[in-house]
Length: 170
Image 1 (cartoon, rainbow, N blue to C red):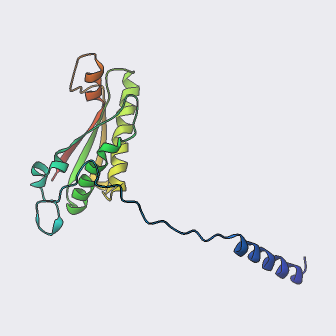
Image 2 (cartoon, rainbow, N blue to C red):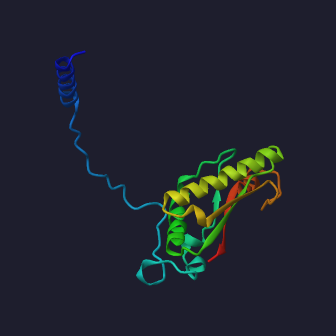
Image 3 (cartoon, rainbow, N blue to C red):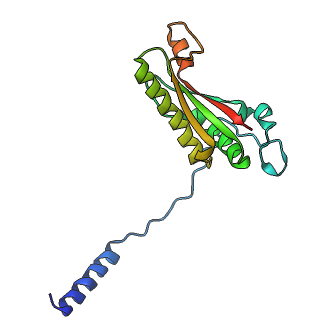
């Protein structure tokens, strides 16, 4: 192909790209009103969390995340708590947490260990998406080994499908 043909072909492609592009008008974000779970402000000055907030702040006291049957996706009602815990991790770089994944008694031991780990990783991902550092988070799975309820009913199984957030360094 000679130089003239290449220049004409390049000019034609550029013109086509410019002609085909659309200008998209962005709509302003829609205010959906207040969220269902209010995020409380930390008690310490300058808007930063301190160790005492782990016991006094309502958002930080929520340290159990529940999951649906056979699922490892985080439910929407726990997003506000993930934002609070992630902010605590950002405000306190020396803090560390362990995410303890659990499952109900249904399923094999190996499956439940894997499910508990996937649930712990889902919480870890949510914390990191909100600005928490992965180096401050450890995930461990107990599978069905640490039930909070031992009856064989749906209500009891729902209590065992969880990830517990345990602060190992505040």
